[in-house]
Length: 347
Image (cartoon, rainbow, N blue to C red; front, top):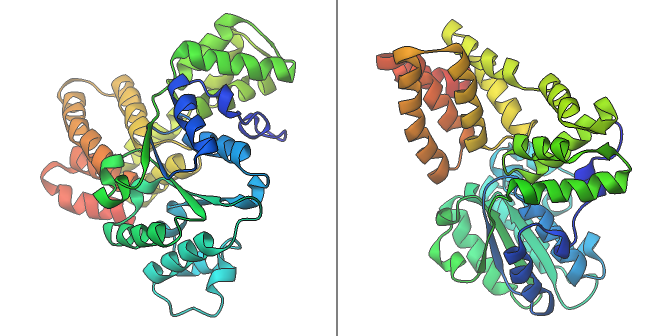
């Protein structure tokens, strides 16, 4: 799509968030800044809510909201971090610095500088379930040192991965997945602002297709409008069917069976990183496709293994590794260790 993404063009204000309880809790932080832990599934609006809060609390939100995605550090090499234009000013001339020290320096520098407007700024740490415990200890010290001029907001799918000293310094804000009706109301507001023809059945179909993922719902509605010029049930069914990732998901199973381990891992990575799937969502999609292509003991075994993987995804920090583990154990059985290694390293 060449047009601006609707997720950006129609970024919600605090009052527009579909979860009323979230509006109430974040509303308290407008007049009384506090550290926050935003906890809930992928795609339910955590990051959008922080940006809405920043627009309410800062006169210059573009400069006084600092967004740091944990994946920007832990899933990248030192060279990639050092050359990122957001961080290079902090890391110039420090090529021998360990990755942990690089992360600590960027965080401290981001927290240390004075706000551009008002008395404080906001630092968002997104996908915080990926922060190692040793780095969390460093984060705790930074939070203590700069608490007078910096509000820390930690967004995570797994709050239990945070160490108690951090959780005790933050006010928890639980996010639930919006209902189908709530999602449809969000879509109605957007499509009316865009002047797109729609009917209620079309919005309900898109909302149900997204299954509680607001980001996916909005982008799916934009895809339908761009493809068909309207959002009706038939238009959404045809448009979203065309952009289905089922072929990619089937290719993962085929590659694993054929021993094409690098290709399987690459496809999983693309679905997680480029298509925006969360690990739990991608697991559901893999099982859905498997039900159409497999049967009997083979399918039953995959579902049994998926139960353990679902727990791993809830408590672990590397979705790709856990999904690779599932496929390797399912495909290789007694030789699972070799399959896991090959899938994990892509050789």
